Length: 398
Image 1 (cartoon, rainbow, N blue to C red):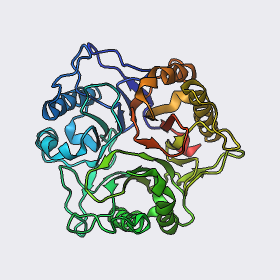
Image 2: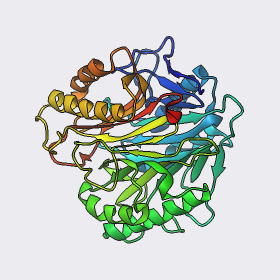
Image 3: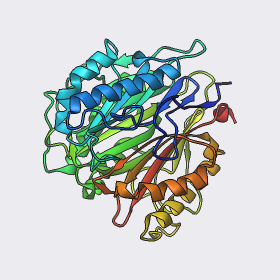
Protein backbone atom coordinates (compact mmCIF):
# COMPACT_ATOMS: atom_id res chain seq x y z
CA UNK A 1 0.00 0.00 0.00
CA UNK A 2 1.18 3.54 -0.74
CA UNK A 3 2.43 5.79 2.04
CA UNK A 4 -0.22 7.65 4.08
CA UNK A 5 -1.09 11.32 3.67
CA UNK A 6 1.44 13.42 5.61
CA UNK A 7 1.10 17.09 6.48
CA UNK A 8 4.35 19.08 6.43
CA UNK A 9 4.75 22.21 8.53
CA UNK A 10 8.03 24.12 8.30
CA UNK A 11 9.70 25.13 11.55
CA UNK A 12 10.58 28.76 12.27
CA UNK A 13 8.30 30.22 9.64
CA UNK A 14 5.28 32.48 9.77
CA UNK A 15 2.02 30.87 10.81
CA UNK A 16 -0.18 30.18 7.77
CA UNK A 17 -2.63 33.03 7.23
CA UNK A 18 -5.53 30.57 6.90
CA UNK A 19 -6.40 26.99 7.87
CA UNK A 20 -3.77 25.13 5.85
CA UNK A 21 -0.29 23.66 6.07
CA UNK A 22 2.83 24.20 3.99
CA UNK A 23 2.65 20.97 2.00
CA UNK A 24 1.00 17.56 2.00
CA UNK A 25 2.89 14.45 0.91
CA UNK A 26 0.78 11.80 -0.81
CA UNK A 27 2.89 8.75 -1.53
CA UNK A 28 5.26 9.72 -4.35
CA UNK A 29 3.71 13.18 -4.77
CA UNK A 30 4.05 16.41 -2.84
CA UNK A 31 1.35 19.08 -3.13
CA UNK A 32 2.62 22.45 -1.95
CA UNK A 33 0.68 25.48 -0.81
CA UNK A 34 1.02 28.59 -2.91
CA UNK A 35 4.38 30.14 -2.03
CA UNK A 36 5.02 33.86 -1.94
CA UNK A 37 7.84 36.36 -1.33
CA UNK A 38 7.77 36.25 2.47
CA UNK A 39 10.46 36.13 5.13
CA UNK A 40 10.16 34.05 8.31
CA UNK A 41 8.13 36.80 10.00
CA UNK A 42 5.63 37.09 7.18
CA UNK A 43 7.00 40.32 5.72
CA UNK A 44 7.07 40.78 1.95
CA UNK A 45 10.61 40.85 0.57
CA UNK A 46 11.35 42.80 -2.60
CA UNK A 47 8.41 45.17 -2.63
CA UNK A 48 7.89 46.36 -6.19
CA UNK A 49 10.64 44.05 -7.53
CA UNK A 50 9.18 40.99 -9.26
CA UNK A 51 12.60 39.39 -9.79
CA UNK A 52 13.54 39.59 -6.11
CA UNK A 53 10.08 38.36 -5.13
CA UNK A 54 10.50 35.35 -7.42
CA UNK A 55 13.91 34.58 -5.89
CA UNK A 56 12.48 34.59 -2.36
CA UNK A 57 9.46 32.55 -3.46
CA UNK A 58 11.73 29.89 -4.95
CA UNK A 59 13.75 29.81 -1.73
CA UNK A 60 10.53 29.13 0.18
CA UNK A 61 9.56 26.39 -2.28
CA UNK A 62 12.99 24.83 -1.82
CA UNK A 63 12.41 24.66 1.94
CA UNK A 64 9.15 22.77 1.43
CA UNK A 65 10.85 20.38 -0.96
CA UNK A 66 13.72 19.75 1.46
CA UNK A 67 11.27 18.94 4.25
CA UNK A 68 9.95 16.11 2.06
CA UNK A 69 13.46 14.97 1.02
CA UNK A 70 12.92 16.38 -2.46
CA UNK A 71 14.57 19.03 -4.60
CA UNK A 72 13.78 21.40 -7.46
CA UNK A 73 14.60 18.57 -9.87
CA UNK A 74 11.51 16.73 -8.57
CA UNK A 75 9.08 19.55 -9.38
CA UNK A 76 6.71 18.40 -12.11
CA UNK A 77 4.34 21.37 -12.16
CA UNK A 78 5.14 25.05 -11.59
CA UNK A 79 2.13 27.37 -11.76
CA UNK A 80 2.86 31.10 -11.64
CA UNK A 81 0.11 33.53 -10.63
CA UNK A 82 1.08 37.13 -11.35
CA UNK A 83 -0.17 40.65 -10.89
CA UNK A 84 1.33 41.47 -14.31
CA UNK A 85 1.67 38.39 -16.49
CA UNK A 86 3.82 40.20 -19.06
CA UNK A 87 6.57 40.32 -16.39
CA UNK A 88 7.10 36.62 -17.11
CA UNK A 89 10.33 37.11 -19.11
CA UNK A 90 11.84 39.03 -16.18
CA UNK A 91 11.55 36.03 -13.86
CA UNK A 92 12.57 33.36 -16.37
CA UNK A 93 16.29 33.58 -15.39
CA UNK A 94 15.25 32.88 -11.79
CA UNK A 95 13.28 29.86 -12.95
CA UNK A 96 16.26 28.59 -14.95
CA UNK A 97 18.53 28.97 -11.94
CA UNK A 98 16.01 27.19 -9.71
CA UNK A 99 15.22 24.21 -11.96
CA UNK A 100 18.60 23.81 -13.63
CA UNK A 101 18.44 21.23 -16.41
CA UNK A 102 15.03 19.87 -15.36
CA UNK A 103 11.82 21.20 -16.90
CA UNK A 104 8.42 21.10 -15.16
CA UNK A 105 5.00 21.49 -16.68
CA UNK A 106 3.73 25.03 -16.17
CA UNK A 107 0.98 27.62 -16.46
CA UNK A 108 1.45 31.38 -16.05
CA UNK A 109 -1.54 33.73 -15.78
CA UNK A 110 -2.35 37.23 -14.61
CA UNK A 111 -4.97 36.89 -11.90
CA UNK A 112 -7.48 39.42 -10.63
CA UNK A 113 -5.51 40.02 -7.44
CA UNK A 114 -3.26 38.07 -5.10
CA UNK A 115 -4.03 37.23 -1.49
CA UNK A 116 -2.10 40.08 0.16
CA UNK A 117 -1.26 43.63 -0.97
CA UNK A 118 2.30 44.00 -2.24
CA UNK A 119 2.58 40.49 -3.66
CA UNK A 120 3.57 40.49 -7.32
CA UNK A 121 3.44 36.73 -7.75
CA UNK A 122 2.56 33.44 -6.09
CA UNK A 123 3.80 30.02 -7.18
CA UNK A 124 2.06 26.68 -6.68
CA UNK A 125 4.04 23.47 -7.20
CA UNK A 126 3.61 19.71 -7.38
CA UNK A 127 6.64 17.44 -7.00
CA UNK A 128 7.15 13.75 -7.65
CA UNK A 129 9.82 11.40 -6.33
CA UNK A 130 9.31 7.62 -6.56
CA UNK A 131 9.74 6.16 -3.09
CA UNK A 132 9.64 2.42 -3.78
CA UNK A 133 11.15 1.74 -7.18
CA UNK A 134 8.43 3.44 -9.18
CA UNK A 135 9.10 4.87 -12.64
CA UNK A 136 11.06 8.14 -12.83
CA UNK A 137 9.39 11.24 -14.22
CA UNK A 138 9.46 11.62 -17.99
CA UNK A 139 9.74 15.11 -19.50
CA UNK A 140 8.05 15.24 -22.90
CA UNK A 141 8.57 17.89 -25.56
CA UNK A 142 6.13 17.88 -28.47
CA UNK A 143 8.13 18.73 -31.57
CA UNK A 144 5.17 20.00 -33.60
CA UNK A 145 3.96 22.48 -30.97
CA UNK A 146 5.14 26.02 -30.34
CA UNK A 147 8.37 26.48 -28.42
CA UNK A 148 7.64 27.06 -24.70
CA UNK A 149 8.21 30.79 -24.02
CA UNK A 150 9.82 30.16 -20.63
CA UNK A 151 11.54 27.40 -18.65
CA UNK A 152 9.03 24.57 -18.83
CA UNK A 153 8.08 21.59 -20.96
CA UNK A 154 4.83 20.44 -22.57
CA UNK A 155 4.12 17.33 -20.49
CA UNK A 156 5.62 15.57 -17.49
CA UNK A 157 4.57 11.96 -17.02
CA UNK A 158 4.86 10.47 -13.53
CA UNK A 159 4.01 6.79 -13.72
CA UNK A 160 0.28 6.51 -14.35
CA UNK A 161 -0.23 10.29 -14.19
CA UNK A 162 0.62 13.08 -16.62
CA UNK A 163 0.74 16.82 -15.98
CA UNK A 164 -0.20 18.80 -19.09
CA UNK A 165 1.09 22.37 -19.29
CA UNK A 166 -1.38 25.15 -19.88
CA UNK A 167 -2.11 25.41 -23.58
CA UNK A 168 -4.26 27.66 -25.70
CA UNK A 169 -5.13 28.61 -29.28
CA UNK A 170 -1.47 28.93 -30.27
CA UNK A 171 0.04 28.13 -33.66
CA UNK A 172 3.48 26.60 -34.20
CA UNK A 173 5.01 30.09 -34.42
CA UNK A 174 3.89 30.84 -30.85
CA UNK A 175 1.19 33.34 -31.80
CA UNK A 176 -2.52 33.21 -31.01
CA UNK A 177 -4.90 32.33 -33.84
CA UNK A 178 -8.61 32.91 -34.48
CA UNK A 179 -8.63 36.13 -32.48
CA UNK A 180 -12.19 37.15 -31.61
CA UNK A 181 -13.66 33.70 -32.32
CA UNK A 182 -13.80 31.79 -28.99
CA UNK A 183 -15.27 28.66 -30.57
CA UNK A 184 -12.46 28.32 -33.11
CA UNK A 185 -9.94 29.15 -30.40
CA UNK A 186 -11.42 26.36 -28.30
CA UNK A 187 -10.90 23.84 -31.10
CA UNK A 188 -7.28 24.93 -31.57
CA UNK A 189 -6.63 24.55 -27.84
CA UNK A 190 -8.09 21.06 -27.84
CA UNK A 191 -6.01 20.12 -30.90
CA UNK A 192 -2.87 21.21 -29.04
CA UNK A 193 -3.91 19.29 -25.94
CA UNK A 194 -4.55 16.19 -28.05
CA UNK A 195 -0.97 16.36 -29.33
CA UNK A 196 0.31 16.62 -25.76
CA UNK A 197 -1.82 13.75 -24.50
CA UNK A 198 -0.82 11.48 -27.38
CA UNK A 199 2.85 12.27 -26.75
CA UNK A 200 2.31 10.93 -23.22
CA UNK A 201 0.57 7.80 -24.54
CA UNK A 202 -2.83 9.04 -23.38
CA UNK A 203 -6.08 10.46 -24.72
CA UNK A 204 -8.98 12.67 -23.66
CA UNK A 205 -10.62 9.63 -22.05
CA UNK A 206 -7.75 9.66 -19.52
CA UNK A 207 -8.08 13.29 -18.43
CA UNK A 208 -9.23 13.55 -14.83
CA UNK A 209 -8.87 17.28 -14.14
CA UNK A 210 -8.88 20.48 -16.20
CA UNK A 211 -8.55 24.10 -15.15
CA UNK A 212 -9.76 26.68 -17.66
CA UNK A 213 -8.59 30.30 -17.43
CA UNK A 214 -10.69 32.80 -19.42
CA UNK A 215 -10.15 36.47 -20.10
CA UNK A 216 -13.92 36.69 -20.56
CA UNK A 217 -16.01 34.09 -18.71
CA UNK A 218 -18.90 34.75 -21.09
CA UNK A 219 -16.93 32.75 -23.66
CA UNK A 220 -17.54 29.57 -21.64
CA UNK A 221 -20.40 28.20 -23.82
CA UNK A 222 -18.35 28.67 -27.01
CA UNK A 223 -15.34 26.85 -25.59
CA UNK A 224 -17.60 24.11 -24.27
CA UNK A 225 -18.47 23.19 -27.89
CA UNK A 226 -14.86 22.10 -28.44
CA UNK A 227 -14.72 20.31 -25.10
CA UNK A 228 -17.77 18.22 -25.98
CA UNK A 229 -16.33 17.41 -29.39
CA UNK A 230 -12.95 16.21 -28.12
CA UNK A 231 -13.94 14.62 -24.81
CA UNK A 232 -16.96 12.80 -26.24
CA UNK A 233 -18.52 10.58 -23.60
CA UNK A 234 -15.69 11.21 -21.11
CA UNK A 235 -16.07 13.99 -18.57
CA UNK A 236 -13.21 15.32 -16.44
CA UNK A 237 -13.46 17.24 -13.21
CA UNK A 238 -13.24 20.93 -14.01
CA UNK A 239 -12.74 24.45 -12.69
CA UNK A 240 -13.31 27.58 -14.76
CA UNK A 241 -12.89 31.24 -13.85
CA UNK A 242 -11.85 34.61 -15.23
CA UNK A 243 -8.33 36.02 -15.23
CA UNK A 244 -7.15 39.55 -15.91
CA UNK A 245 -4.67 38.63 -18.61
CA UNK A 246 -3.12 35.58 -20.27
CA UNK A 247 0.54 35.21 -21.15
CA UNK A 248 0.23 35.46 -24.95
CA UNK A 249 -1.70 38.37 -26.50
CA UNK A 250 -4.78 37.30 -28.44
CA UNK A 251 -5.53 34.19 -26.36
CA UNK A 252 -8.98 34.28 -24.83
CA UNK A 253 -8.40 31.18 -22.71
CA UNK A 254 -5.81 28.67 -21.52
CA UNK A 255 -6.39 25.13 -20.23
CA UNK A 256 -4.17 22.86 -18.12
CA UNK A 257 -4.86 19.22 -17.31
CA UNK A 258 -3.94 16.16 -15.30
CA UNK A 259 -4.44 12.76 -16.93
CA UNK A 260 -4.33 9.19 -15.63
CA UNK A 261 -3.86 5.95 -17.52
CA UNK A 262 -3.53 2.99 -15.15
CA UNK A 263 -0.73 0.52 -15.64
CA UNK A 264 -0.97 -3.22 -15.04
CA UNK A 265 -3.08 -4.00 -11.98
CA UNK A 266 -3.97 -0.35 -11.26
CA UNK A 267 -7.65 0.58 -10.87
CA UNK A 268 -9.42 2.30 -13.78
CA UNK A 269 -10.36 5.96 -13.96
CA UNK A 270 -13.82 6.45 -12.43
CA UNK A 271 -16.18 9.38 -12.93
CA UNK A 272 -18.29 10.39 -9.92
CA UNK A 273 -21.72 11.94 -10.39
CA UNK A 274 -23.70 12.60 -7.20
CA UNK A 275 -27.42 11.83 -7.43
CA UNK A 276 -29.58 14.84 -6.66
CA UNK A 277 -26.92 17.49 -7.18
CA UNK A 278 -27.51 20.13 -9.83
CA UNK A 279 -26.44 19.33 -13.38
CA UNK A 280 -22.92 20.54 -14.30
CA UNK A 281 -23.03 23.75 -16.34
CA UNK A 282 -20.41 22.52 -18.84
CA UNK A 283 -18.94 19.26 -20.10
CA UNK A 284 -17.59 17.89 -16.82
CA UNK A 285 -18.52 15.67 -13.89
CA UNK A 286 -18.55 16.20 -10.12
CA UNK A 287 -15.28 14.34 -9.52
CA UNK A 288 -12.93 11.80 -11.05
CA UNK A 289 -11.20 9.10 -9.04
CA UNK A 290 -7.80 8.19 -10.46
CA UNK A 291 -6.13 5.50 -8.40
CA UNK A 292 -5.71 6.76 -4.84
CA UNK A 293 -6.55 10.35 -5.83
CA UNK A 294 -9.90 12.07 -6.13
CA UNK A 295 -10.13 15.24 -8.21
CA UNK A 296 -13.21 17.25 -7.21
CA UNK A 297 -14.54 19.85 -9.63
CA UNK A 298 -14.62 23.45 -8.52
CA UNK A 299 -17.65 23.87 -6.30
CA UNK A 300 -19.68 27.01 -5.80
CA UNK A 301 -22.49 28.12 -3.48
CA UNK A 302 -25.40 26.45 -5.28
CA UNK A 303 -28.09 24.18 -3.87
CA UNK A 304 -29.55 21.15 -5.64
CA UNK A 305 -31.96 23.34 -7.62
CA UNK A 306 -28.98 25.41 -8.79
CA UNK A 307 -30.11 28.41 -6.77
CA UNK A 308 -27.40 30.66 -5.35
CA UNK A 309 -27.27 30.34 -1.56
CA UNK A 310 -27.06 33.73 0.14
CA UNK A 311 -25.29 36.91 -0.83
CA UNK A 312 -22.65 36.88 1.93
CA UNK A 313 -19.40 34.93 2.09
CA UNK A 314 -20.28 32.85 5.15
CA UNK A 315 -23.54 31.48 3.72
CA UNK A 316 -21.94 30.81 0.36
CA UNK A 317 -18.91 29.10 1.92
CA UNK A 318 -21.12 26.80 3.99
CA UNK A 319 -23.10 25.67 0.93
CA UNK A 320 -19.91 25.19 -1.06
CA UNK A 321 -18.32 23.02 1.65
CA UNK A 322 -21.52 20.98 1.91
CA UNK A 323 -21.29 20.31 -1.82
CA UNK A 324 -17.64 19.25 -1.57
CA UNK A 325 -18.47 17.00 1.37
CA UNK A 326 -21.25 15.23 -0.55
CA UNK A 327 -18.99 14.58 -3.52
CA UNK A 328 -16.14 13.26 -1.38
CA UNK A 329 -18.52 11.01 0.55
CA UNK A 330 -19.94 9.59 -2.68
CA UNK A 331 -16.43 8.40 -3.54
CA UNK A 332 -15.61 7.16 -0.02
CA UNK A 333 -13.37 10.11 0.91
CA UNK A 334 -13.54 12.66 3.73
CA UNK A 335 -11.99 15.93 4.88
CA UNK A 336 -9.10 14.02 6.43
CA UNK A 337 -8.12 12.95 2.89
CA UNK A 338 -8.02 16.44 1.36
CA UNK A 339 -4.47 17.10 0.20
CA UNK A 340 -4.81 20.33 -1.79
CA UNK A 341 -7.46 23.01 -2.11
CA UNK A 342 -7.47 26.04 -4.37
CA UNK A 343 -9.81 28.89 -3.47
CA UNK A 344 -10.90 31.42 -6.08
CA UNK A 345 -12.45 34.53 -4.53
CA UNK A 346 -14.31 37.47 -5.94
CA UNK A 347 -12.76 39.57 -3.15
CA UNK A 348 -9.72 38.40 -1.18
CA UNK A 349 -10.77 40.79 1.58
CA UNK A 350 -13.36 38.16 2.54
CA UNK A 351 -10.69 35.51 3.10
CA UNK A 352 -11.21 35.40 6.88
CA UNK A 353 -14.93 34.65 6.56
CA UNK A 354 -14.08 31.74 4.26
CA UNK A 355 -11.40 30.55 6.66
CA UNK A 356 -13.81 30.34 9.61
CA UNK A 357 -16.06 28.04 7.60
CA UNK A 358 -13.08 26.00 6.38
CA UNK A 359 -11.97 25.37 9.98
CA UNK A 360 -15.43 24.11 10.85
CA UNK A 361 -15.32 21.44 8.14
CA UNK A 362 -11.66 20.44 8.17
CA UNK A 363 -11.29 20.32 11.96
CA UNK A 364 -7.74 19.25 12.88
CA UNK A 365 -6.84 18.40 9.28
CA UNK A 366 -4.98 20.96 7.19
CA UNK A 367 -4.58 20.73 3.42
CA UNK A 368 -2.06 22.50 1.24
CA UNK A 369 -3.78 25.59 -0.11
CA UNK A 370 -3.65 28.40 -2.65
CA UNK A 371 -6.00 31.39 -2.53
CA UNK A 372 -6.27 34.33 -4.91
CA UNK A 373 -8.75 36.67 -6.50
CA UNK A 374 -10.35 35.70 -9.79
CA UNK A 375 -11.09 38.45 -12.27
CA UNK A 376 -14.60 37.05 -12.39
CA UNK A 377 -16.10 33.75 -11.29
CA UNK A 378 -18.10 31.56 -13.64
CA UNK A 379 -21.58 32.78 -12.69
CA UNK A 380 -22.98 36.08 -11.49
CA UNK A 381 -23.31 36.41 -7.72
CA UNK A 382 -20.64 33.86 -6.79
CA UNK A 383 -18.19 35.01 -4.16
CA UNK A 384 -16.13 31.84 -3.98
CA UNK A 385 -15.27 28.61 -5.74
CA UNK A 386 -12.96 25.86 -4.44
CA UNK A 387 -11.54 22.78 -6.13
CA UNK A 388 -10.08 19.91 -4.13
CA UNK A 389 -7.62 17.06 -4.58
CA UNK A 390 -7.96 14.17 -2.12
CA UNK A 391 -5.69 11.23 -1.43
CA UNK A 392 -6.42 8.00 0.40
CA UNK A 393 -3.87 5.18 0.04
CA UNK A 394 -5.56 2.01 -1.13
CA UNK A 395 -8.73 3.85 -2.18
CA UNK A 396 -8.21 2.89 -5.79
CA UNK A 397 -8.41 -0.77 -4.91
CA UNK A 398 -11.45 -0.38 -2.68
